Length: 335
Ligand code: UT7
Image (cartoon, rainbow, N blue to C red; front, side, top):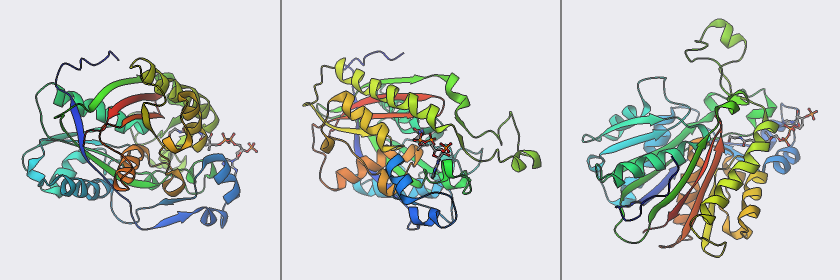
């Protein structure tokens, strides 16, 4: 558990990255129009200005659209994929796995796949899982998707949560690293004692969907924001610093912190703990809000597209979310 990787073995590398968001945007003014909230409150407490919402369609559509762009960027057809891992907390349905729906919509006929639910740490846990499949030698071509349609589980009359979330899909392709870079080290944790502070209570085997669960609003996200915030600022910063220190990385060595986008103040705490300047933190929470499993691949995709990530760059990916789940992964960019 959380042991240093043996970098003598073959390593996995990200070789394409993409994201997709729907066109519909809800800005802070929209919430002002019917809730006791303000653009000023939302901006200063969270950093969020607007979020994209998928009106028609499901999370598989967010994932498929991102995956198609990733495949095109890599120059692959869907048949090149051997394994699809879909990280999400908002699957199309409890089952079948959304990975199967994505496989079918893509027309990828040579693969297997599964879903992974680790809340806001979904993408990090997925990256760990995908890279281990490649390191083991079992697979060479993995499609990793982080996608969430948070609007499907948000109560738009609950000002504590509805202003925070948005919908988006991210996708990366992983292959064996051909050179120096790749997925270098990972530090991942859970603490299930945190499950009482951030959850969706209804619809699972504990509280199957019923008129009562719906009447009580248990099909919506519940969050004790302050409790989650207190742990997130400490644990995400500690995980990010730990991954630097145990690999001998200084703040000069790190090109970017790529943090889960839940709250600008949480990102700032991690940045300060790592000793990084502001220009070394990927931040797009202002435009998308918290898109759960999609935040980190979205950042990677935007910064890559803007030509701001270079081969050999050291990136620290970090997250904290429901569970609690948290951790950090050191990626040396390989293409
Ligand atoms: O991604 C998964 C992990 N999640 C996180 O990392 C989120 C962690 N938590 C947070 O980001 C912050 O706690 C929030 C943004 C959710 C809330 O910010 P806060 O500074 O912790 O505010 P608070 O929860 O302490 O609430 C302060 C006040 C409360 O009013 P009272 O009780 O003091 O009268 C809230 O009712 O702000 C009120 N409030 C709002 N006011 C206007 C809560 N939401 C809103 C709102 N507009 N949208």
